Length: 489
Image (tube, rainbow, N blue to C red; front, side, top):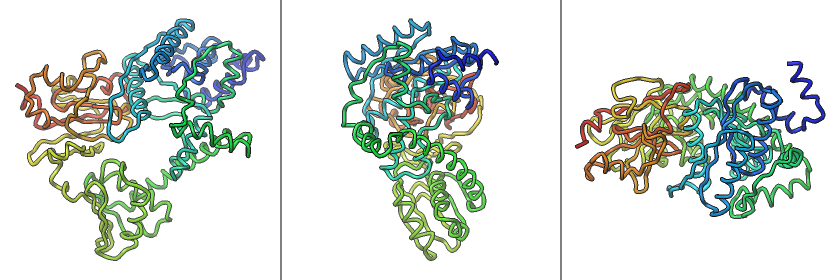
């Protein structure tokens, strides 16, 4: 310990390295002996992160850590993308770290931007590598500037406390951000000091993207008012993050008193208790209720919440409101009742599968008018077929990174069948190989997360999401009756 403290006082240690080391140790992001996957694009931020962690290892600031590099090549910028991959491979060889470079083709997806699809693909890869190589954490190069830009983006959208809290220092799935306390200018200074080259992404200059407009147009104006605007916004996010944690605790406590029934498809709230809460807490409780009853909050806005408060919570007996997704909110004497109209008690029809049915964790959905159900429980059940994904499939809950839904297959769908070493396969080709009749394919439920298909129910799970020895939060998906045994030729 004394030797490490002396090293930190050494004048040859750059201030950025001191700051990163202090954050890593103080927040326990990385511990001695950890195996860390470092996301490296080739740009200055990720190269700075890799260089700092490498230097920390060489100086024994954190003893015996192992570094592995992950790089994603989307091929969107032609030769520039190829140059980035070659640069990362050379950098890995220079630092003596193993590297995994993966080429990803971004498929069109309704309701998602190119950036969001790239992010989903990137984090799905990280999750798979984390599991396959038994890594402790995934380190990404988000800086204080990224934090400031994120806060401004959420502010423009009119976000609440959670959004304005910005990027968390660490999150589920083992994601850590050791550079959040370092500005982009400090990153460049450290790279110059260390003599480390880096790549420049030409798309970062395009004003087509909202984040780039914040970076190149808004922040310079704010910097004229406050030269330390990046640090100020990052500090504000840190304060709001702590406040959001306190509010979440209060919300959980009040939820137990207000919620009389709480299940997917139906939530009943004590109307008088709701009305007696402060406005901010009423909004939080309503959002929680909507999330439970719908299995997710996508498609519902601040206006919807405000309408419920004004017309239902503050209304008379019989006051009601219809919301997107077939949701009905009604005042029934002293209670606020939220429930699905068509889907209540009937499950999801085969037609519903085309748009997707929310699948809560834990919970279940019924497919069609028969007894077929897709079910989710927390924990690892090991029925027959749980390893290959026929009757059941056990996944790592931390890999899901968002709400689940059940839908049928779409043209262009692909997944990474369990047992194929992470290789992608088009779902259509998978069905052909398994000799699944064309007429039956639309009836096979797919459990889907934001990052892609998790389970072809009754047939095969996706290896990117499969539970492994390091899984902390296992989740079991099951279907009855088993599709593969019933439908397969």
